[in-house]
Length: 331
Image (cartoon, rainbow, N blue to C red; front, side, top):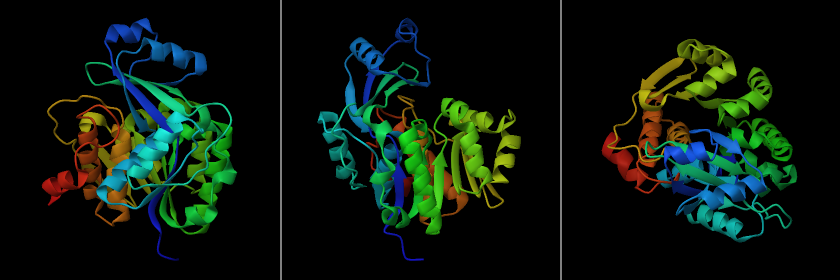
């Protein structure tokens, strides 16, 4: 097997996040499910955007956020995702390339426009996401280059993008390309609603040995396994997946890898400002440790450091120097 060109290549939604603070009363008035993620159509996206207060726009998307964290830590990364030939598409492409991440997916000329996620952040830091998938749900399998997939040590797939049919086919092709090249496949479950729609697909991938690293939070773990007891659920999953990583918010994170078990507490933080991207950046830290051959517990700690940074401010892209934070914490 040749040396990898990239540490991690990811396939995910190419989204621009639009974030605004709000009150709990606003969440109720707009009929939103606090703390969750809901897919919305064009009309609902416009209604919610019009209802938002002063907002910040920043490139997002779960897998793209993870790559931003990985690149900030020093990993060599590439992203595959679909944007439209419009202003937000240009914003997304500029931002991800400016972070040192390779991004060569051709733009889509036709409607719909580039995806956006409207995020309402309540005073307790909880984020309520309303996602208009737009162009991102039309990523064709033909946009993938199998040789590029095969040139990455890890292929990282975003569960959110499993929902639309076209990118689902693209991800299946990518899994085959990675496995044929002897590379590792990592998958993040993303949200319980995704599992409710595609849990059978995910379980089939796991049973077929197609997933090497699985990321979940404790609620997603329960939804996937049907087991409420956290410890029983993770043990059951670890019997089928070589590396399982599960986050538990303020209760830290657990991992089981090839029979080895590790748990780390959450990193201390003065105030939770916005939980957007916490799981994405946790995955970034863990994967950085993984591709660098760090011990399992240290990889979890790297994830916790990155997650703590991201929840200390608005937005799902790092603002502090992650390398410095890691050096201060781990030496």
